[in-house]
Amino acid sequence: MRWEQLFADLEAQAAEQETVAEQAEEGSRARAEFGRVRLADRLRGSAGQELALGCRGAGQLTGRLVDVGVDWLLLADPQERELLVALAAVASVAGLTTTTALPADDAVVARALDLRRALRGLARDRAAVQCLLIDGGVLTGTVDRVGADFVELAEHPLDQPRRRGAVTGVRAVPLAAVVAVRTAVPAGA
Image (tube, rainbow, N blue to C red; front, side, top):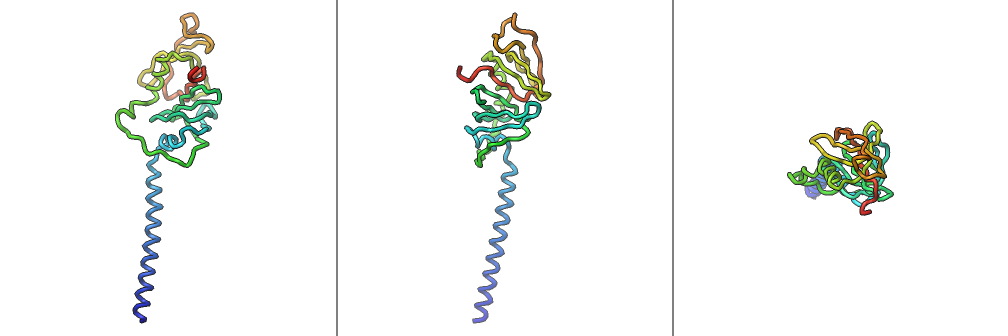
């Protein structure tokens, strides 16, 4: 009878140690898995939520999260203007839900949908925009062309269409200096 009690105690201790080890391993595994989550995936889980972004040079930008790309995110600001934000300029994000999206497929197609491609869409639409820069500057005009690492902006007042007489100059801006590009009119207007 004593042996049976001894074996039962040893089995209980072993089971308890195994449970503790498994719990420690699960926690470690969860931390390791979360360590592979990218900010874009974390943001993607909060689609539709109101976010407040702290951005270098532009301060706080707020709006409803519409979409997330590999190096950009799109907000609809309180006036329903679209705000294309360079992910590299984001210093902090408030308003995230607890949900994290599955990691995005890093396939060729996904990598091609970068900030340059989004800016080319604005150039194609000939939309009047405000370009917020990391030095705090704001340029207004129309995106003319997008190069490998820069964007060209035809500068003109927002209330005037891009016409030769309204353009005061063309400015090349390195993409690394762009915090965000905001459309002048609400989406769909």
